[in-house]
Image (tube, rainbow, N blue to C red):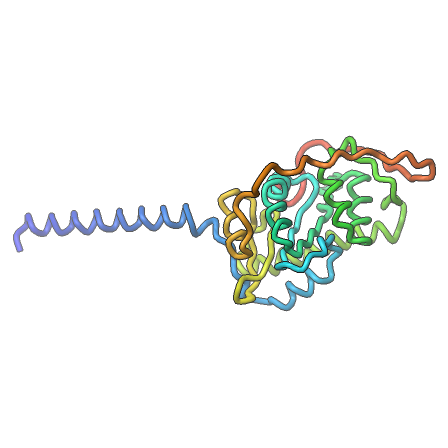
Length: 252
């Protein structure tokens, strides 16, 4: 083999390696990085933790889907606005689990009305209440149920939502799940637990595909609910002290 042939062979190997690396990177960037994670460890612990949470259930009999979310989560709001109606359309058994993010170095990251609403949802598991809360701005939302602050039982429920996340995140992390919100959890056709850290719209179709939900809904979607505080004299109105700036796990 001449020197010229050797140089051609080396050049061919370099080009092949570059093309291979580029092709793999494109495949990873367009598919692998957005794909959900199939749980292979501590499935029972994860399922028991979900079942013990104060989820708000849609009450339908379709495929089960869990949505882990918090109030001031922009990516959660986008997913819920775009995707939740599609799963409602197929009668999915939707289970919404809102939680109160932990305070950060003494700074309170949640509002009084937020804590009160989370406690009420966890206690009564009201799906309509969650939808109404999400449809209203923090400034307009003035719940008329009992406040969580200065109520030991309801404050304990708020803390339970935080404990739920403190236990769930390590279990998912051990399975290689990136902790971003919303966390969407379901079972595929073979009953394996799947998790999507659905912080990007490129992830959405995986959940729809597994649960056979439509990519688009026929006709116009219903407008968001307009929430007005009931004029009940005996109601205990919680002040709407909206926190400024972003907070929660995604701000870490």
